Length: 574
Image (cartoon, one colour):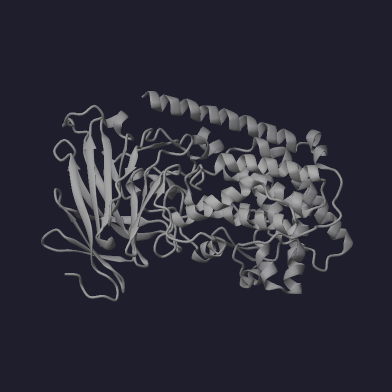
C-alpha cells in the first residue's frame, strides 16, 4: 500500500507541475510575452540538413490533389487548404503541422511539387504563424516543424520570390525563439530531447553567433546524457523511441561534419550506444520487439538507420539499464522484458508486461505480445497495455501494474503506468551452448502476496526453448489457498502461425513455408483461446493464444518447452 500511495503522490505532483507548465505556456503565448519572439530575420539558410526518413513521390501527388494520408488517416480537403478544415483526429493534426511530409515533395523533384510545398507553407504562416496556440504550437510539434523546414528548405524555397523568402525565414526564426523559450520547461521525454535537437540544427543551419551553437550543443549534451541510458536504450523503455531519435540524431551528426564543427562528445557517444541497442531489439525478420509502446515495424526505416551502424558481430544479449534480455542462436531469437516500469513522467506508453517474451524463428514470429495499433482507436490502448496482452503470467486476471485513468490526469498526462513492479532482479545463466536468464518481479506481492519468477533457456543450437514459471511468497512458505491465487500463463501466437493440438496435448505451431515448433507443458494441460494482435500494419487482427491456467497454491511451478521440429528447407528432426 505504501508503494501505491507513493506512486499516487508522485502522479499528482506531476499533474500539478503539468498544470503550472501549461499555464506558463499560455502566458508565454499571450501578447505580453510574444514580443520576445520577434527579432532579427536571418538572411539565408546556410545548409539543409539531410533527412533519413523514407519519402514517396506518390504521396506528393496525393497531397497536390488534396488527399492527405497522415498518421494512418486519409483526409480529403475538397480544394481547401488543410489548415482551414477541422479534422477531429489529433494525430492527423499533429502530423499536418509537423510538416514532415515535405520530404515527399523533395522526393518528387518537380517544380509542381516545390510550388505546392511553398503554397502550403505560405498558408500555415498566414493562418498560424502569429497565433501561438493549439496543436500547431505545441512544443513537440514545433520542434518537428523546425527540423522539417530546415531539412527541406531547398524545395520550399525553390523558385521563391523575395517576399516569400523573407516571410519563411522570419517565421522560422520566430519558431526557433519560441522553442528556445519553451524547451527547458517541456515535460520529460523524447519531445524535450527533440526540441534540443531542433535548436542544434537551427544553430548550424542559420547564420548565428558561435555562442548560440555552443549553448545549443551544451543543452543537447545534457539532455542526451540524461535520457539515453548506458546500454543505448531510452528512459521510456520504448524500442520505437530509439528508432525515432536516431532518425534525427544521425542527420544532426552529419550536419556538424558538413559545417566543419565538432559535435559534442555526448552526441557521438549516444549514437554509438543507440545503434547496437536498436539491433538488440530486432527479431530475425528485422522487426522490433513489441514492448512498452512499440507497434508495427516499417522495415525500410530500420534498414536506412542501420546503414550507419559500423559495429560488427552479433547484437548484445544483455541490456540491464533498459531492462531487457536477449537469447539468440541458430536463427532463433527470444527477447524478454526484465525491467521495472519507466519513471511516471515518461510512462504514458509503458506496458504492464514484466517478464513477457517474444520468440522468432527464421523469418517468422511465433510467440508475440499484442503490441500497439499505432494509428488506431484510443479505446484499444488500455487492452494492449494490460498484462493479459503479453506473453507472461497474470494473477486473478489483474495486471502487474496499474494505469491512471482519471479524467483530471488524462487531460494533462494521458494514462501513465503507475504502481508497477519495484524490484526485478535478473541474472544471466549462460553456459556453453546455452543462452538463458532467470528473473523475478514483485508486481503482485502487495495485492496477492506472492512473486512471479521466470527462467528461460535457449539451447540445442536454437532448437529448444525451455521455460519455468514459479510462484512463491516473498518470505518463503506455501502460497495460501484463499481464492486469490489463480494464475494464467499466456503465450500469444502470431496471426500468421497455424496452431494444431493432438491427443497428447501437444500443440504444433507451424509457419507457412517456415519452421515448425511444438509446445508442451509437464504440469498443466494447455488450452487454446482467442486473442487479438494489435500491431499489424493493417490494424488489429484476430489471433490465438496458448493458456496455462492453475492455482498457485496447488501448482507453484510449471515447466514448459518449445521444440523446433522442422527447419524450413530441411527434413524433420529426429
